[in-house]
Image (cartoon, rainbow, N blue to C red):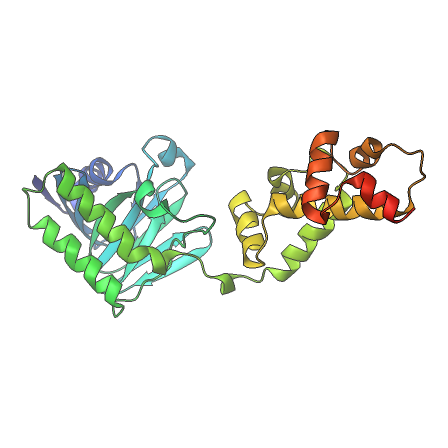
Length: 303
């Protein structure tokens, strides 16, 4: 079903109410006396789209607006004509006709329309885009250029879907899945988006400093070095490593070093415990897996 609400300067608040109904909660202000706007809302099955015409306006979502609406989706913005500026988390996308960008509805954002602009906003549930991401991050407020084949195909698919009001639930879900599949490769953050070597080196230093602590977990490490847990996993994956496995192997290497110089009377369980292994059976099994012999046999070799 499609509804249209053309509005002019005298009914800015009515226009904003239409935006809030179609797209979720926004605050807004005009940029001058030339405001104009209209909203065409399209819903069928799982599809929620809006055709928005707008000029001389700034839309924004603060934590207040986010708390008052559903944040379980992304705004997938398809610029049809004119220009717009999308900002989120310090990133800015300047869109022209044919461009696409992604905005996370769960985070603050700002949309600026200085001249006449027309765009389609598709509410894409985050599950469609985050599926099979593993530890990668999505790049929001990044311009996907109109010339890219996947951008053109996804825009054609969305516009064709808006012309077909008979799509059932299964068909509309297939459209969402297709758009997500087309755009996902371009939205995944690349390895060269930010320098990681210094962060990785700082992370290894922190692990070594706290290697004897039973509390050494990915959540604590990520918090202390200033990254998300997902970014921490991704940083290790670039090096072919897994965080938990790296910590365990590092502890085992230090245990092996200790066994080579430990007094004969010192209990094996005490050595394991001193390097973060609270359970002797687990320590013995892990040690044999890494070195091929038990801790006791290893110590005998260096006695």
